Image (cartoon, rainbow, N blue to C red; front, side, top):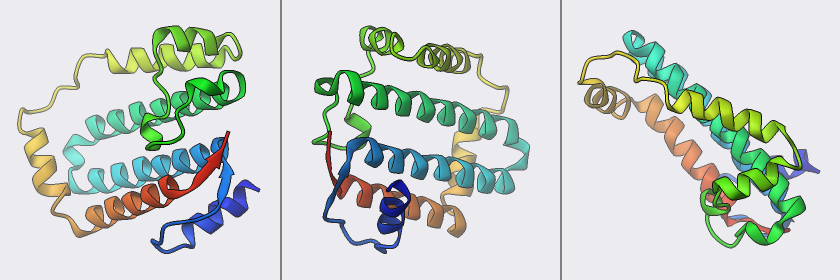
Length: 169
């Protein structure tokens, strides 16, 4: 079922999708699109800025962990407390993963606690040493690169298509 939904979304070539799927499947599709974007964009950014590979890869790894954590939280919330998942808006806003909700969901799967601890550790690490011009250099180099922009456009298109799907809790 998931594979079929995945194929339908990615073969739609940019058109808004009608139809309905489970909200868990919809969120899974979005998580897969985000994961692909993180891998592909980091790979291209490292090709463009190899001297900043450590920082780029740290950011990618932090984002991948965040995707895993949020996906598990949404899956658990849809199963155990569906009223706390707002599926009417953008997927990024479906859940407010407050400490209270996270503690409640962690009772159903302790892996959420593990992912949250890893995430907190990664996001509270001191910034990797780089020159102060990194953001400017990244914007100038990556955002002007045709391949990087195409990756970004592909992700944005996939996100719009997935967000346009209706789903049922």
